[in-house]
Length: 415
Image 1 (cartoon, rainbow, N blue to C red):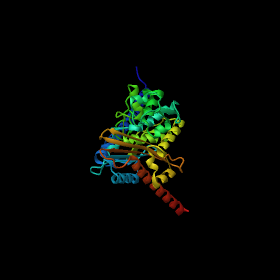
Image 2 (cartoon, rainbow, N blue to C red):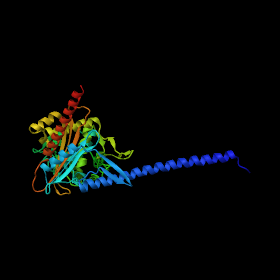
Image 3 (cartoon, one colour):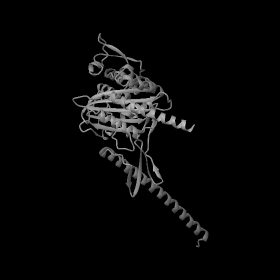
Image 4 (spheres, rainbow, N blue to C red):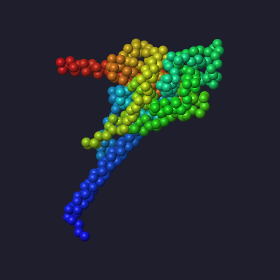
């Protein structure tokens, strides 16, 4: 039996074409694998250099290729933040500035008072009890499910800064006081948040909302940042402790603390924070993956903004509005915040937290920035988180004015 020349030619072409496509697929897989390996290498190298050596490398070599690293850092804000930390040091302090429009980290730094040396590891460690910052998550859970409204009133006995089991009972006496939920948020009332969680929510519901806000998941894809931790409560009293932030088991990083306010400021969108904008080698440019998802409905966002604004105007974050500079900031920005304080964590000490967002009032589409300030003090307190937060906002406000003046001058020059 003979095979025609046509069939031989057809078989040869088929094998050739098949082999070519197989080679193309193999090359594509090789390039993709190389990109993945390069991204992993850059992530590990940048994380190590920043945390261990306080250095942001611009070029890294991987498999004979030089990779240029582009950061999201605004170096003017970065230098200003470092100056603030050096001028007003606590035992330990960390500051994070995040762009609410994109999730970019614009500035990040930490410091230790003992040697006045910058410490870039502090903002990227998830070893800090979140304290009352967790009330942001509990509020979002209660409000988003229409379980309560900001005006809903609860009663309590004793001090709002404590959380005893007797305070969680619904016993009414002549010492019972009534307060709205939004004021409980502004004044950081632990009892109200504990009772609201027991009466209107559950451990599972708050655990799910905590995940939506970034707990127990990977926050950054371009930097080694340990996950923030929220543990499922096993009893009603533990639920009250977790919901109010009155515990040392719920752990967070300063980067994550900035993200909490950013979610509210950005209209309820969770955006992965990132510090590496892109890496490039020759004509190849790659970026790390990012997550952007809606986690709060519009009504809940409006309610959260109302409560966080009240914390600034009348509550625990009112130090921001004080003085002439504070009044200027309040006139220029829409500001919302949440504070928190608790003793514990690594490094050990009394934590003084501030999570804040600031949106320019004259730029409707600009979502502004979010800040996280974390102070850790031992026997003595030096500078409060609200004081440092105001200093950072003053820095950003001054820079905005300079940019505006420069733009105006350029426009006048063109005309």
